[in-house]
Amino acid sequence: MPATRSRKRSRKRAYHHGDLRRALAEEAVRTIQANGVQSLTLRAVGQKLGVSRTALYRHFRDKTALLKAVATEGFRTLRLQVLGAWELEGHGLKGFDAMGSAYVRFAVEHPSHYRVMFGGFVGDCDDDQELVSEGSAAFAALVDALAELQQDGVVRRDDPLKLAQFIWAVVHGVAMLAIDGQLAQQQASPDELMAFASSRLRTGIAASL
Amino acid sequence: MPATRSRKRSRKRAYHHGDLRRALAEEAVRTIQANGVQSLTLRAVGQKLGVSRTALYRHFRDKTALLKAVATEGFRTLRLQVLGAWELEGHGLKGFDAMGSAYVRFAVEHPSHYRVMFGGFVGDCDDDQELVSEGSAAFAALVDALAELQQDGVVRRDDPLKLAQFIWAVVHGVAMLAIDGQLAQQQASPDELMAFASSRLRTGIAASL
DNA sequence: ACCTGAACACCGTTCAAGT
DNA sequence: ACCTGAACACCGTTCAAGT
Image 1: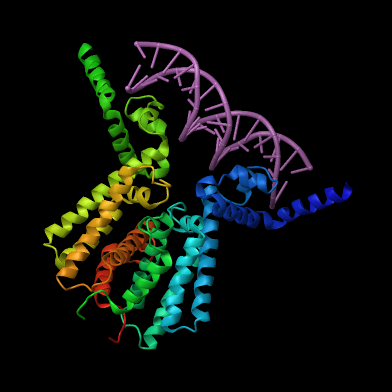
Image 2 (image 1 turned 180 degrees about the vertical axis):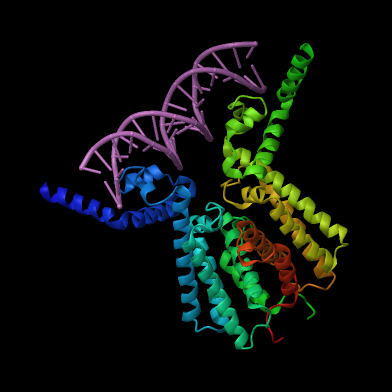
């Protein structure tokens, strides 16, 4: 009985020492991935952590701020997975294909999390510097890879920023259509479409040059 | 005074005769375009039409069903605008570019409406046959245009369905990034990116071949 | 057939109060 | 410094009741 009490107290003490913010964000990610953004309530996330439903307001300005933390974590994971694929395949065009596949795979495996990042739930994100910088870092991974491919002489020397925006639009579009079930409705798989997209991105869709 | 009363009554009578469903959907579209999906409440839409907040349930199963009607209307408008651009430019590759521009323009000009169509708010749409068929019709416009371009010998003879999914992913990706403000953050304009995307879609991004 | 009003079970957020 | 409990102003939805 005293043991239980002390364990409980020490856990609570940990929150007092600055872990509650992180715990809240992690619990939010779990809830969202399990049941979607709509199911995320501040009351439930507080209860899950054994804390009052208003305790959150000591660490986040409002619900949107919590969602911004979720989005930030999403951009971080996305960047790491995309860069991991790029490295694992040893860069080059093969590595670039792997980046695209990894991007779409992340979205398909974490659809609700991906929607928090791009579904307009966070609103204006200029007030969250961490979110902005994680988003930029993820995009920078794409720009860097393209610049390297240009150095290798396998990608045309357009403005790498513009090229990256274009490629991003393609993978983002494939990911979004997949998440929405629009591809499933046409009996198409995200992987298959992404593979086709990769090949078309390289050789173009025109029959004659 | 009697005039006012009779006008009021005749308006109410119109709803009785089957216009309330349409009026609710139109009001929902207006509200969403003005203030976003989040701001749509059944209470407010009812009040705006001078009707009880529960009157809606005679015409829609729930809020999701209303959103499905909004999405359906969105797909209809999108198809008409895209086809209009295609016709106006006299088909061909020029017409195809115009389709892409029109698509992105619709999304940018009606961001909240576009999000209802693709933001996961409608959930499974198999129970709304009108929504499914309007979505299919919009996609079919793209497939038909591509098939014609193949006949003209200006687009490679891949499976037109796969080609259409790919192109759709590109324009959808550009549209979504634009709506999200991701492009603005990089000082890029949707039109400019779409123009670049159009040219890259035709000639490919590879430097050699 | 179509609509209303009250009621129910939820929300996010504020704020005085506790430790 | 951090958390709580009650309170406030909202939601979507149900259902008996009205015309």
